[in-house]
Length: 394
Image 1 (cartoon, rainbow, N blue to C red):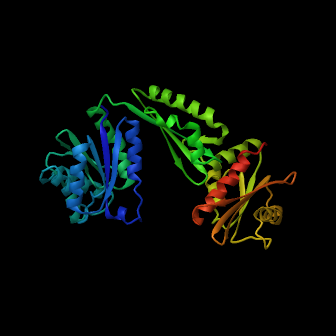
Image 2 (cartoon, rainbow, N blue to C red):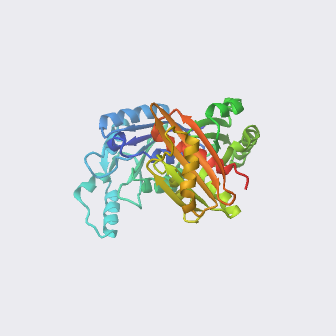
Image 3 (spheres, helix red, strand yellow):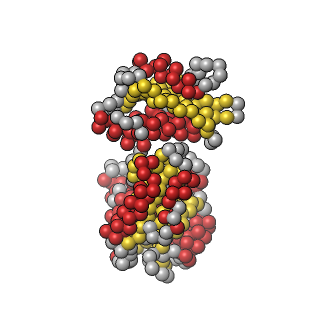
């Protein structure tokens, strides 16, 4: 059987909503590549008894329990004591760990504070893991048939130790684990229900596992395969991907991290064309996507952001799009211009987009209602506009 794992993110700041737990998502991706099945992810504040209870529960059902955070020198860093309590051990002072910490501060030209001595304590019998990129030593507690692996909360430190120490350790403990690989396809212009109606039979498979996730005008298709080798997992994914593409065709625009904006800009770059945008009521969602995707190449040339634009009393959105293009395209020396706007009409939200080609003055306009919250409408309009250009025959 494949080993099972879970992650416990520790720190009251994670529960406040001001800090996003990126550690758990990174660990889950690394575990997947190592053939380890993740069953649970939880977050807990800096309470020793609560952390201990969650660790105890995790150990009862999982082979591997990761904790992140709570290994610092301050009073609210509770991981060491909590893991010791959960595994019925005493905290013991490790002189070698103290020497490592002192050496790290010396190399930085700084004097170690007395409270850093707390970091030299570990549960009795734990396997120490040196932290060469920070001050918080980590450790592994092997308890009954399971193990707790305690990692720092600082992402840079966590990633280094996970790659250089923890994954090699797990490869030794679980030498015959399968490989789990994932490929994500991205669709645009169709809803989640339409995608499901086309490939629902693939979502019933057990290996690979196929799942959908809907965003603003974009649907992700995640294909996750388990194999005895990378080659076998790749073959399983390839078979399902081919069938998925056969059913969905060109509504699939990219895969594995490609953005719609990068795909559109790539098409423009290959054809020697440039793009500018005009936006109204969108908070600049379209320009923001293009700036990131362009990364200084110069295919995306300019963006004009208007707080509000309306050229007629009847709120004819398509006419507004035409007028917006005509009003501003002369100031934008690009081959293509996309206009994007969001309108709030009483209790309704309407988005409008237009695509203008400067050499022949041709224009495509589109207006549609939006049923979600207005703060998401700008991103939806941006994706509709980008898809108009993606579908344009150059």
